[in-house]
Image (cartoon, rainbow, N blue to C red; front, top):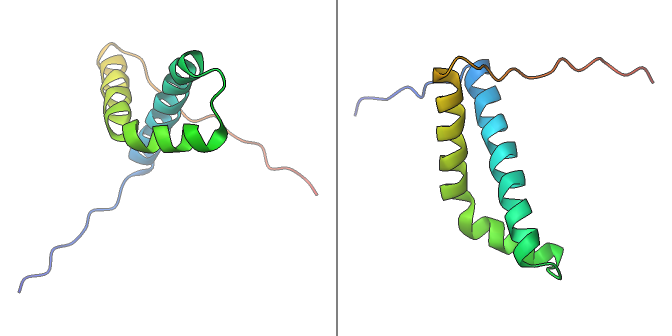
Length: 83
């Protein structure tokens, strides 16, 4: 059998994936909280697990559309904290 090499994600791809996850979750959470004002944390987790894939797809498409429109998502530089 021929071994297939798995391509590693570039730092830019990792940043885009993280941005899509944040965008998808927080966008969905606003809608969910409005529809379920008395919802518990466990209910929210279960609901997110059920809809995360399509929500992430929508967020990735939105980010891709922004990039095509000339906008770029860049991770903020985090200054190291001194202990």
